[in-house]
Amino acid sequence: MSIRGVHLDIENLIHRYTPKSPLTFDGVRIEAKPGESLVIIGRSGCGKSTLLHIIAGLLKASGGKLRLDNEEVKGPSSRWVMMFQAPHLFPWMTVERNVGVGLHFAGWSKDKLRDRVAEAISLVSLDDYAQNNVQDLSGGQQQRVALARSLVMEPEMLLLDEPFSALDAFTRAALQRDVRSISKELGFNLVMVTHDIDEAVLMADRALVMAGSPGKIMHDISVDLPDPRNREDPEVQKMRRYLMDTFEEAVALQKGNGGTQTKVGSLSRMNGISEPAG
Amino acid sequence: MSGATQTMQANESNTSMMFKSTGRELVNFVAGLLILFVVWYLGIEWIASDPDKANFADFGPIPAFNAFPWLWEDGIIQDAVTASGYRLGVGLLIAIAIGVPIGIVMGTSKRFREYSNAPFQLMRMVSPMSWEPIAVLAFGLAGATVIFLVAIAAVWPIIFATAAGLAKVDPAWFKVARNLGASRWHMLTQIIIPAIAYDVLTGVRLALGVAWIVLVPAEFLGVSEGLGYAVQDAKESLSYDSLMAMILVIGTVGYLLDGLCVLALKRYSWHK
Ligand SMILES: Nc1ncnc2c1ncn2[C@@H]1O[C@H](COP(=O)(O)OP(=O)(O)OP(=O)(O)O)[C@@H](O)[C@H]1O
Ligand SMILES: [Mg+2]
Image (cartoon, rainbow over the protein chains, first blue to last red):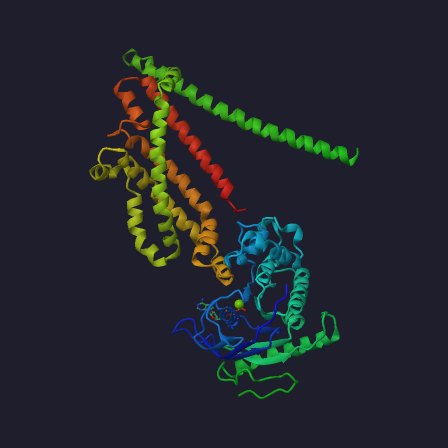
């Protein structure tokens, strides 16, 4: 399998669920190079999942621009696949059929999809479980099946909505490492949402801090650390503290402002320069 | 004691336990039926002991069993079961063809659910036999009337079970499927139908029970074959032994059909 990434370009994205409901987020701007891993961190309810659904084409934004490789996103596509917090496997299908279901939707014959499905299953180290009922797998194994189900589509971008939050610490650490290394190996983009600062430090090329109501991207922080990343590494620890401080500051700032206008997105603290808030 | 022997002993006791449990089930099955026949026999004996009611003796189990050979040789049982089975099958198929789509719409559209609730609940509570006069006017005194009555009896459990099945479906499955590029057709055949198959079959099982009960009285009138007709015919010709034999056939065939449903439910159940 070899996959290439995609150029993601989001400008002034606005969303409200109904004409009467308040803005979920306002003026979101994100740009990512092909193959880049973005991790969005933010408090519960600030609109992270909503943003991810919009990028995946599962939800239509109320306004703004969303382009992938200079093409407007109009709906879901197998070029960008989303993975959710829970595996949501189809319990009436085996592991193999769950993984192959997207290719089946795309019209692939059973014979044709077999090899690629086997390859994807192998990528998540579940070869021995291909014929199993997915209900007999552990939570971590199920989430791996969901990962294989996404990877088999050879997406140019993988969207992850807190995909490991329900897993135990060991499984989570293993999957964090695997997803990052697979994405780097195959060259696809990652856009991941999480509450977990550690996860952001371990997986991101860039961490975006989202805060406020309506939500905004408050900071865009480059996480320039060598791979493989180790939680205990002083550099990783340092970055973690820096992210934590930035995050808490952003939240405090929002509260101080009563959640009103703050300059959008461009408040970059990439070089440790802190800009005053509007 | 070595590990191997221990395992073997464990296996042995497992197998013997299995035999014991299926053996016990078989014994209980036979014993239950025997009790039924004994109660039946004693009840009829007791009634027939009154000289005024001596002819009740024909209702007993022994005359009924004695009637089986000639009922079978004359092809009466086979013909009745075939005719009734055909009507039941067609009626059920119609009920499924109408009930499953309505149930799917009901399960997916809140508005439809709200509109349909009152009329459906009201019509569901009407005994299917009440529609007979209307059915006779519409279809005449014919098999079609029986099929109509079976279908209208069977359609409600199927509608409600389908809708209930859909209500239990994880909405995320649709999101995941859409995300992976499912068309509407895939959504229906790969996601919705397998997801609700178990509940639909539960509905079909209930429907079969109601339909089987409605079938016999529906065949009392206007048709000249089928289990209901055979019961009616036996009643009019005062051959109570064959009447009871036909009742046994009705019960047995219904029991077997229900058993088939249980097997299908096991096959299509993914619930753990
Ligand atoms: N389907 C919906 N209809 C209306 N409002 C919604 C809907 N989904 C989410 N919201 C609202 O939009 C806001 C953002 O929700 P969203 O799920 O995107 O937050 P989140 O950042 O992902 O939170 P969490 O970290 O808890 O998952 C919340 O205030 C939520 O109440
Ligand atoms: Mg969320």
